Image (cartoon, rainbow, N blue to C red; front, side, top):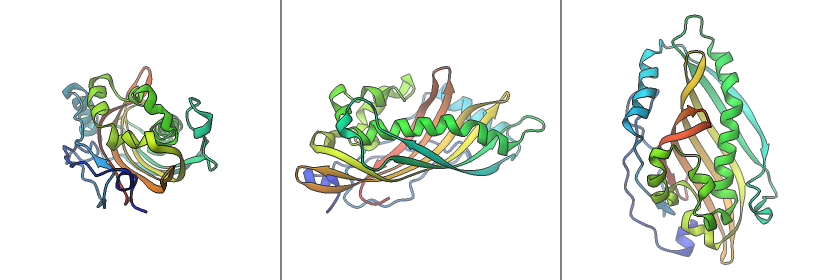
Length: 242
């Protein structure tokens, strides 16, 4: 069948205002072509100081990068609803690299050091955004808390391009099929200061009217904060094709 939006209601008009890709300084572009998307919203810009911080880190780098592939462990969705627990556990596959200006910087070790916390964050994001439809009842409170305070208002307006959104009211459960993330960690002072994450998710939703595909493709600009990783800017789309 078509997308959830195609099954339960007409698609909304799409707008896009993509953030910059920190790794290159160029405008990030989605590589997918969506057919009958659930709904697409424009990207929310991060506040100028946040983006400036990450860009400054990137500029200071001297091309010291290295790749690392890590299989994420299984994790269930939010404890908010036991009924939302999928039969198949969510598994995020991470391909990580790191860059830093420090003398003697080891990108392989740096990527391995930062990957576990990022994996936990992405597991949490996908769980509250897609695997627990009842999150809608709280106004997506748990999901919005994963965004920097400066863009939580924009994320709330764009909730349909970041999660199940309005379709959650008709969805009984979501079965995850695949979740992949490509992460570039940006180090400063021996610690990860920011990251660029390219995240994709595929799943199947079960609703009263039948089943339908769930798709997400996002580029997330992340900041490391005392409270953990937070999303400072994003370009995100949900739809049929991934």
